[in-house]
Length: 194
Image (cartoon, rainbow, N blue to C red; front, top):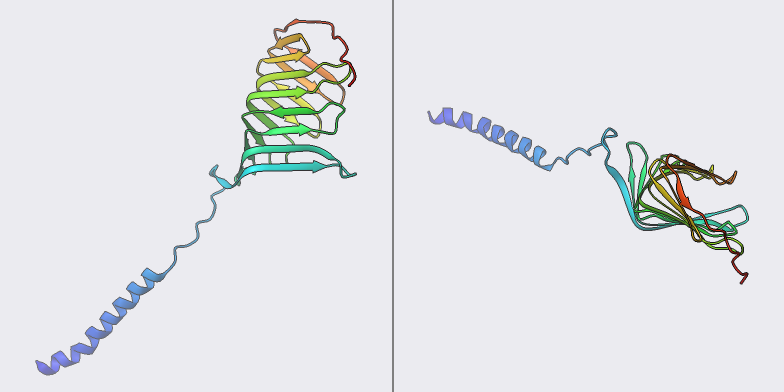
């Protein structure tokens, strides 16, 4: 029996060493890197306190975009902005556009502003300040067009106009109010030149 025990001893040691080797291999292996699932709408990066400036060909600032937070999604390449403020500076009268939230399409061609949308055009000689308020507005920045399918309130000086929907083309200089439109119109008194 003694000789038989001696002949099993090397086999038992080899089995123990093999078992320990398999156990060590499993313990020390790193988990495989999880690939981003493009079917899930999850952020792939974020940025806080964002400021973007766009310049024209002469180096003059066209607009400044400020947001408290930017969230980018890899599945559809969209971007969400929290408290975006956009100042257009390349106009005779500066324009500010802001909202609580905004979604920017992959190519940047379409921006959807949501919740407390507010536009303000500064007063100029002969033109009083103008504002627009709504809850949702789609903007095509390159085409300088806007559309809101929610109620809007427009003001210019003392004039106040409300409508159920609105379309605007800044290049042509037209605003089309739709649905039930109501307003109180006042003649604009020229603003004195500074």
